[in-house]
Image (tube, rainbow, N blue to C red; front, side, top):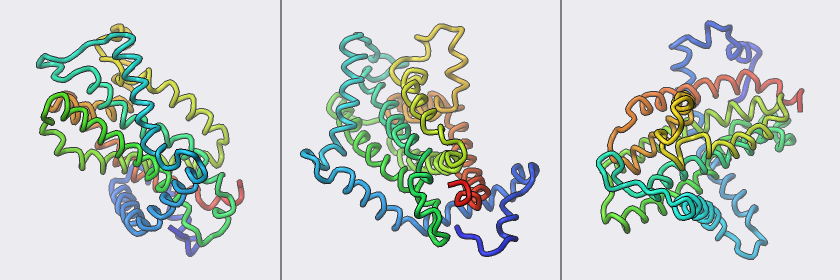
Length: 293
């Protein structure tokens, strides 16, 4: 989204009250959705080009697009399912095995977390393009999210295939997966706009993201059940906004029911807020990118 006058710039710099105006937020959602739809082909082309460049000249080449997520999932399943010998499943409360439980939360988390460090530096890493006023810098976050969705797609195929092989059926909640994917894209793109914009001014944002990604797999209910955590620390899991993200996928892929209804409500609201407010924040900070970089 480009600015054509000082008035347009000022319109994106509302006071504190403007940030909580429902009508303004509705316009932000509409503008963000329209922008993503308008640049979708260019974003896909940029993502495809970066993937080809990233794996060109390597011995295994494009195999790593599938091999990397497959290897990470095998490691986690082996460590927690084989070495630690955790066993769940076979009951109404836990209908499927431990491997399915791990995959249901691991796939979306690895897909999202893998893009966070690159999102934090997506603007600073493309300084030459940022200084060209005709280039739509919002594209960088969308491109990085689309690349992470390759991991998501491969992981979902593996999780689905494993479910069919082990149980010969899939829960009806798989029908909700397209809706969950749309919410995930909105959440990830909005979060990407926030991180990429702030990363211009806080250069160690990427390092903080790396630490968060490393710790995230252990502070989220991905490889363990919340009931396994000491009661004193269980509220911390519920207060973590990313826990709702994981629980929505676990309900869809593992439980086959709305085991965490509050997590669905929270994730829907969180996705909409990130998408709309992330777009607004990016527009508010965008005029300063060239001066800071």
